[in-house]
Image (cartoon, rainbow, N blue to C red; front, side):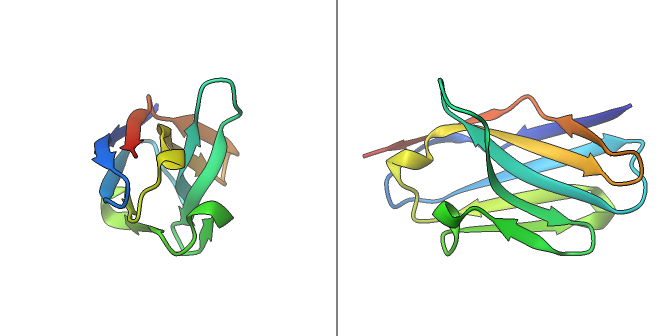
Length: 117
């Protein structure tokens, strides 16, 4: 059984910063990818940023240069540093773990990020 738990959401003014963290626990083996997705009501969940256990990163164009993803492999923890936040970054942010050995993914419960103008 694998669990993913997020923390760090909240309310911030435009131009401010927030840091999200996510910890995965349970049966985690080999190469994996952890990352963040976000969703607003009425829209599909979209990629924000991902990072593999080998260190390869991927960012949505809308957050490049503002957000930075990092991870601590020994702790199965991933962080998302969000700077220069905009009102359009407001969403529920979900952490995701994808394990390549069994093609399974696990989602967290989500954390709300609200950016006021």
